[in-house]
Amino acid sequence: MEQNQPDDPNVYNSGGQVIVQSDRLVFNAKKDSILMYAKNHMHVGINGSFHFNTNNINSENKFIVNIPNMYLGLIEENGQPKLPTEPAVLGDKLGEYLEELIDLIDDICFHVITNISYTVDTPNTNPETTCNYKNENYLGENSPVGETITKLKEKVKDFKSKRIKIT
Image (tube, rainbow, N blue to C red; front, side, top):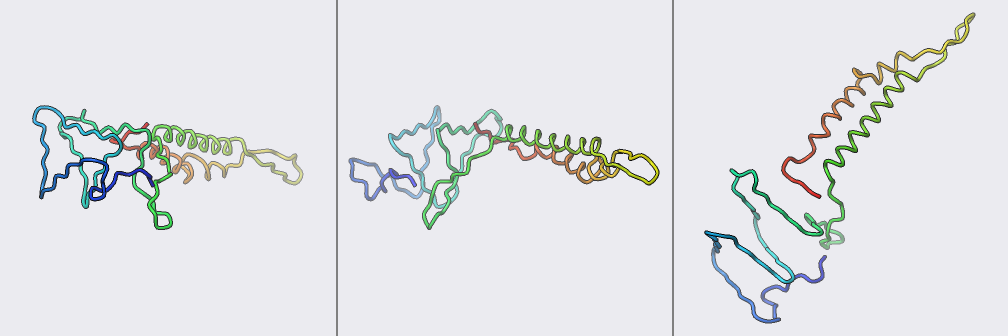
């Protein structure tokens, strides 16, 4: 993982440090903000849950993380924690791509229904080329394939988060 993590408080020996220890700590800024700065790292270690809360009444409240790289969770490899490598997906871009892909599949089905034909060669007549009427049963709008395509088109918008946005 990261090579230059902060030293543990009980092994830190590069100068002064302040340790505040109590059963409970409350920091409350009644008129303005709480600001925290660190030259290198800021580490928060917790044995339980970690909550960020804003006033739920105001829908304009935001939680913004502005950093060059963000990793959510760790993966274990050979008993060692490693940073994840799987990139997040841009929902709008993926949605557009999936809609185009589903439309392409729909177009292919339409062309198979209307343009794929076969030749009928019956005795004592000239060979005749005709549309295969069964194509509509297999690939048409009311067929299982057609109904699945319609459902997929509707589902594309369902997997996008309404609350989480990424760049």
